Image (cartoon, rainbow over all chains, first blue to last red; front, top):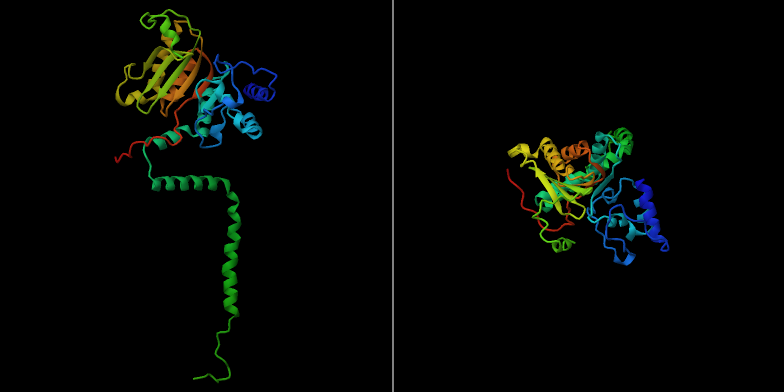
Length: 177
Length: 133
């Protein structure tokens, strides 16, 4: 339901003959036009945070086709938000909570808040960034197992080289003094 | 947008019996406390409650259970005014987020959207220095 609503909203911008459907809240923003948009979206940190709706398809599509309209859904509501969940009335309470928690974790809201509570100097920032990068790379690169056979090859090669060397003294006896 | 309310006289003095079917529930969850405010769609406050006013003091104010009771109190005061539908806006990092959401869900108010409106600077003001505890 959320996907279709946002898609139809987005497409209505492309077809100027159709009036945009009324937003769910009685917001006074019906006179939206391409020129008067200002992005009110917060949290530009991660791509997941830019997904205003809980479905990612519509935002991917809109950000590809027309970047300025990518956050058009945010503008329908009076206040900008980081995360939004659409709740049906029959959903069990635990599921709502879990969905909300998952979305918030994906957006990284709480982490971000904790980081901004106190000032961090450049040293701390570098440490934090390297830690985050390590965590991200460690999770995405389990194919680095190919390094292990190389290590076994190199010591054996070195031993062969040593064996081929000739460590004996010359047989002639004509060693220059 | 609040200019219109002044034309009607000081409506804030009257304990208004306006029936608002739809409102917004704001939950501000900090690390030490949780404040639940119920407003109408325009943002005018109808009633509020917090973990501190519910009788918890000190470290217990920040717990999710305290947030639950605060949310319950706030909504009970508003359900009498006939509010059926609401939207939930949650602000701040704190344990009260889950507790308040749970209590709102249990209270029977239908809500369509749950939003997180934690204010995020785009690298704005410099925050206070680190604590050396």
